Amino acid sequence: MSISIKNNGTPSDASPTLRNRRISGVAAPEATVEQDGLDGLEKIKLATTDESDMVTDSAGEDTSSDVDTGYVVGKRKGGEEGKKGESVVKGEERDDKSGKGDGPLPVKYVYRASAPAHNRVKESPLSSAAIFKQSHAGLFNLCIVVLIAVNSRLTIENLMKYGLLIRSGFWFSSRSLKDWPLFVCWLTLPAFPIAAFLIEKLAWKKLISEPVVVFLHVILTSMEILYPVLVILKCDLDILWGLTLMLSACTFWLKLVSYAHTNYDLRNLHSKEKGGKSSEHPNLDYSYGVSFRSLVYFIMAPTLCYQLSYPRSMCIRRGWLICQFIQLVIFTGFMGFIIEQYVNPIIKNSEHPLKGNFLNAIERVLRLSLPVLYVWLCMFYCFFHLWLNILGELLCFGDREFYKDWWNAKTIEEYWRMWNMPVHKWMVRHIYFPCIRNGLPKGAASVVSFFVSAVFHELCVGVPCHIFTFWAFMGIMLQVPMSTLTRYLQDKFKSSMVGNMIFWFFFCIFGQPMCVLLYYHEMMNRNIIT
Image (cartoon, rainbow, N blue to C red; front, side):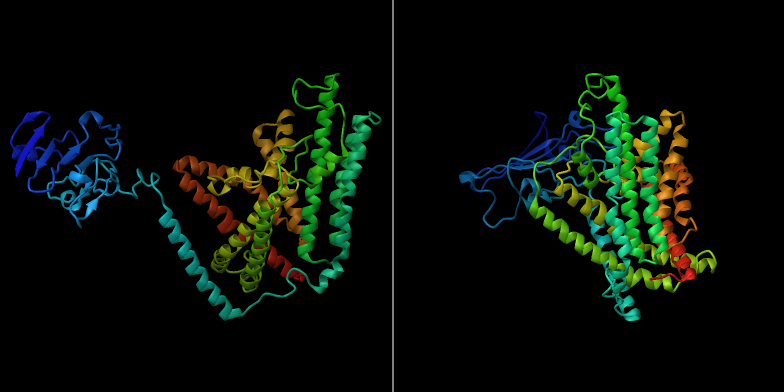
């Protein structure tokens, strides 16, 4: 067997060359081993990248490709690759992970003592410099497994302690038959959009003046929200159906305001252009006034912002709709199971968080945080993802951005901008920018937007529960200083991970369970628990 060493074309003996190889993977020589006695010539080429190909950043970290050392074995005569029965490492399986080479390499040559084991500068996978440059799917799977294990234990413990608490009449009971005033009230809500259409029809024909139009819309929208409130307060009705009626009434109110405000703006633009085209909005035609068909579509569509036309999808996917309906039933049932089996027992065995022992209140809040978080996530998924997408599919409504990635929010302010896009777009369009156009600073416009949101949260929670302690109102208004605080902490730590964890703690781990405890104990004190 003869051995010859080639180092950039200059002959030298083997020992100095092997001793001078650089482990860092820069400018290593090439070694060719010629071995006789086999079927053909085998060549082992140990090579690393040239120094000119190495790219190093300012911090000294190698940012070049992962090809630091290559091993090449020439094929034998007849196309055979390695001895019969011999282990062979293909390009993508080699020790250097390079995945390159002219052919497979026998394992006995890859793991030689002279083969370089360290080729470039590398960080530990969990270090701050490398933690976000790789997949964390395994850790995510671990979290899922841990959650399953923990919740399985809690499920078994709950069943052993309380038994199965699901009532057959959770969603519908004999008392629900007495709630017919709510059903009648809900059926009469579409009368208010019809009245709004008649007002706009008269306004477009210039049969009534603009001040009269504004006055009539104020009266109409006020009646639309006060009518369901009076019905719920006068009748001792089921809380679940009262909440449903209030949510429907608030939705109709927001749609009516958008309908009136948009038509008022369109009339102003139309009056500036006699030809029916406005230079500000060249693609819109206002000359035909209002359309009853467009109003009906707007009332049914999953949006709160009125406009003359919407982006439309081409067809209805029936199979997709069936899957969405099945998921809606499953997750709604799962949400009811958590409320009945976990939330209610924890609340019944707790003291008032503001009147009892402080440590006991903290323990109850933390114990309630997990099931309340599950209920809230199920509610979000059922309503914003499933139900609104179902409506959008049935109506061929094209814009399905009902939410953004609010789970990545770094501040409370970011969360409110991303988690409920229909309401956010309505607030920006009809509250925030009109306030700014009328001279208010941005901070004051934000406070006004949160005030409107706080009023409707109080209506949707306090009216069905017959409780007016303004916990929901204060909880929403506290979002203003909380937004400033979380924004300050985000700027201080300069880390999106820290800001996101602060958001989850303040909003979901502490805030929502505390509100649930406060309203439940107020209901206990007033003896109106259903």
